[in-house]
Image 1 (cartoon, one colour):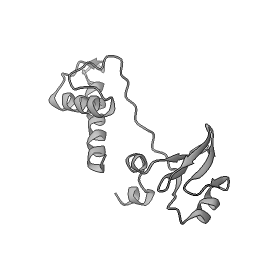
Image 2 (tube, rainbow, N blue to C red):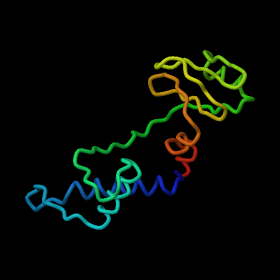
Image 3 (cartoon, helix red, strand yellow):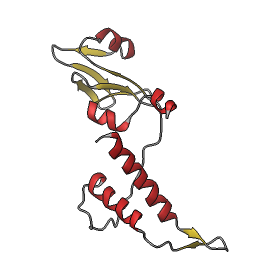
Image 4 (cartoon, rainbow, N blue to C red):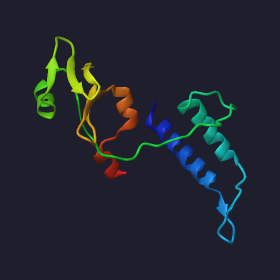
Length: 145
């Protein structure tokens, strides 16, 4: 999923949250907000992409969540940077083609070009490059936006 798609999904989430909050009457109590075309389009996108449901099916019990913005430390294994990897994560084991790291779920394989992430609680885990690209951006990129 490219950045444009990700931004469209984020905008859709904001529109749904805004529309779902409804407007307030002069007494401060919520009033029913009519469903507009933006909300319907956003819900359709979310159903098809995030929930993998065909558009038009009911989202009766679905709850949507957004990841909290947190800063993580990560390094990508390019097969030549094992010394840097060991500084970042000393408990790495290398085979001919893979790395193996100890995670909370046990030992996991790291393929070439995978990222090793240090989570907010100090835990480590591997992440595929395509998933990393969708979920994370460089802090320096965020500061420039």
